[in-house]
Image 1 (tube, protein in one colour):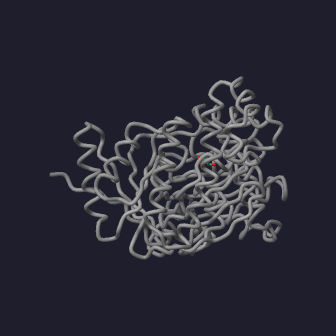
Image 2: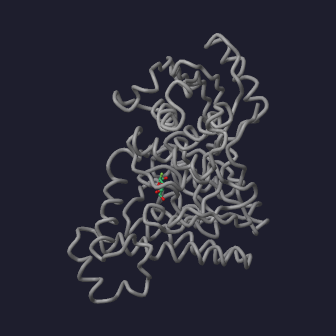
Image 3: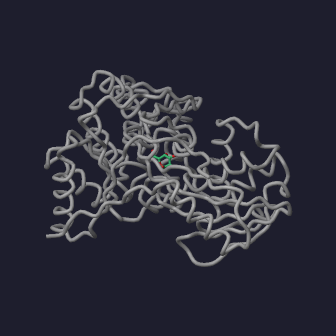
Length: 399
Ligand code: GAF
């Protein structure tokens, strides 16, 4: 019988010390320091951020580490502990020439911050070491860009006064403008602004955040990385976003956030949405999901695990049937977790693969993980990898 495989977070001190040595061997000198930024899971509020709505993510204990040494010549040399080769280029050429793959998330941050302090000031040697599973819908890309953003803020005098809000904006722009993924800002917000032990209630109308305590000590969030690869740059994500924008514009709203659930049945709203392909179902998801986020926060305040779980499962159904961003692997994970006694379960992140989460009693985590694994084996799917999601701290310096 196969046993569940677990992905444990790395130890900050040991990882940073090893990375410092590796940096010196590869790039010829000691780094100025080592920084880290977390991946995230979103507990609820999916595909709402770019609609000005609500989301409730938490930072994972799984982080991406970056050993960084400042240069003064506007050159970038980027290496990864997980990949071969060294990417080399000039900050001033990043936008013109374009950058492919993981270096875009690092070079993009330098290129955006160069607008403030000039290209010479943000040249760096970087060695990254990712401990957030890649392509798992757990924001390994935001962790990558945020790890360099905090490093540059700490190293470059002209950036030291930047607010965390401005750092978030810089990382979102790097992802949108250089990496080419039209993402909505939730991931960078939680990676940079998380509060240890808390979820973050994000109001994406103005990107304010309220920490929400995890009030269910008997329960934890079990993450199932289905290993069905997901990509935000393949067009499906952007297509959803454009449909929502078209719907908001047709309804003469600044964003779908302005539409309340009770108006979904208005004849005029229905006839406007009927004229836009897919819009009725997409809009229904966004509008009802916003309500579910606030209901789940209320459920947490009341320490009502079954209410929290039921809202998570309702979110999954809405993402699967109305927003159509689920995948076989995600549906199998959700069904198996619920069948094994989880309070609730849903896909998390952008979808089309990636990860599912389940709200599980601590003593049942192993049983639920085993049931999910068994369901994958029966369905002939690649076995998933499991993570335990304790709400963790934001990006910052570790060495
Ligand atoms: C991805 C994006 F990066 C986020 O901005 C968000 O839209 C999410 O998908 C869906 O909720 O993680």
